[in-house]
Structure formats: structure tokens, C-alpha cells
Length: 301
Image (cartoon, rainbow, N blue to C red; front, side, top):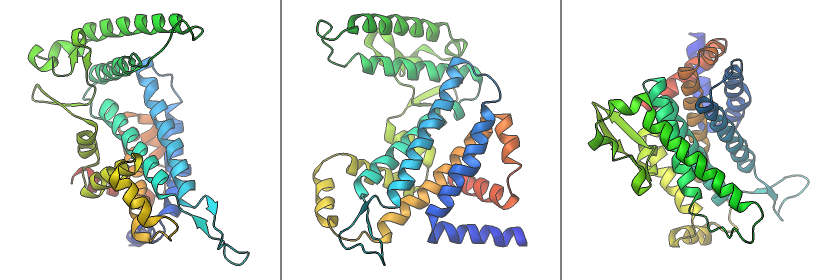
């Protein structure tokens, strides 16, 4: 019964003071399960899972500190400190948090085998190298640019060859494979589902819907995306909120989602690393139950 009351207390904290719980999850459980990964050396395609966790953690700490308030307002006094809330930057950072989580999940958790993980990672790498080719670079004016582009081209060709020699690719029918990998047309997509020998490519919004499931995540991702860009709706929101106190109904939902997605990330890390799983089991039982309960509820939505 005590453990059950502890869970209720954690849920109350989630609803009333999510930033307090969020900070604990970041510097406690997430940091602990991540540290456990470093006990063994990783192959190149595995190493980037750790870099994605690093990116998630950095964005998360930025989100936490921004959510506490960053600029002291004119109405602030010695008796009462008042800080401005940069709703638009905070939402943009949360969008990056969601995309980083979705990327990690689709490459390293969605996969059913190491061969599939490596295949997804290589597609992700090629996609990034193709994007880099779109930069406008004047090799005559930028020192070392020509050599750098030649190096990128060599890496790209080697990576495409790795994909073509990958054991997982041999399991995929050519008519399905062409949906996500066609180097002749520079077409590659690492975001996809693979079920019953069928491939379903995903754009980034569809990937968020697949990994985060709930309407709250999906709608707030769209809302955060609006604030990342300077379209009409974003500027209309800016006009409505500028210079006014931001009510909790606009701040708490993102903070609660930050708690939830951190819990999901912790469980994802444990699902692919035995050392992390062992560390997770050393956490207080109420914390284990809270993190796993939140994750199961969302993933089974």
C-alpha cells in the first residue's frame, strides 16, 4: 500500500509541480541508465545512440531552465522575483526534444535485430550526407572546402556500399526497398515501419504519431512546430501573449509531456542495454513503477 501511495504522490507532483519531478528524472534515473551504457565499447553504428541521448539531455536541460524563467521582468522586486517566460523558444526546444526521441526510437528501438538497426543507421547517415550536399559552398573562396566535399563524397559512396552489402537488405523485396532506398535518384528514408515484409515510409509528423501515440503529444508537436516558424498563426499567438503573464494552461502541458517523454526514453534505453536495465532495477520501486507505468500507458495508447 505504501508503494501505491507513493505512486499517487508522484502523479500529484506531475500535475502540480512537473518541473520538480522533471529535474529529478534528468539528473537521476536518465543520467544513471545512460552512464551504464558506457561500461562497454560500442561499434560505430551503436555509438550514435549515445550521441542522440546526449542531444536529448542537452535539449532537456535547456527546456528545464527556460521553463523556470530567463529574464527578470520590470515588475520584479526584492520581495517578489518575476521572470519572463519565452513560450516560443521553449516550444521550439520541446519540438527538438520530441524529434530526437523519435529518431532514437525509430533507429534503435523499432528495430527487431542488430542487422536492422545497422541498416536504419546507415540510411540515416546517407540521408544526412545528402542533405549536406544541398549547401551552397564556394570551393574557391572557402579554404579546405574542396577537400571536405571530396571526403564527404567518399564517405557517402562507402556508406551506400555498406547498405548494399548489409545482410538485412537481402530480406526486403525490391519493390518495397525502393520506397526508402534508391541511390540513383538520391532517395533515402530512414523513417519507416517494417511489418509483414511491407515497408511504410514516414514523414517526421507521422513518426511522432507512431512513437509518441497520444493526442497530447501529437497536438503539442504541431503547436510547437507552429511556434518554431514565423507563419501567421505563430505571430498571432505572439501578439496575444506578448507582455502578458502566461497562464499555467499553456505551460504545464509541455512540462508534463517532458516528464512523460523522459520516462519513455529511460525505458527505451533499458530495452536495448542490459547494463542500463540492471541500473534501472536499483532505483526505488515507486520510481520504477512510475516510469514504466507512464511508458506502458503511452505506448499502448
